[in-house]
Image 1 (cartoon, rainbow, N blue to C red):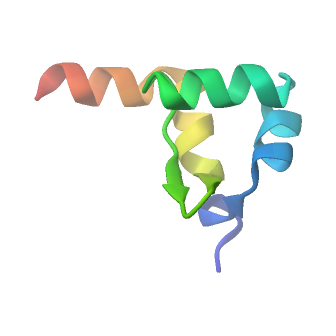
Image 2 (tube, rainbow, N blue to C red):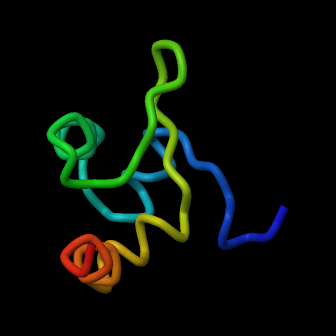
Length: 64
């Protein structure tokens, strides 16, 4: 698997973004951050999170 397509747990995604897991989960549940719930656990794609921070996710959604 490519590093930019790496699937992260809540703890790993929080560490990457330097936010608490509580903040991360709130943003994911509200649809602010890209993530998927798999069973009881949330998973995040590293490249999706980084693209979101760069504003790339918002621009492509606005263009739709």
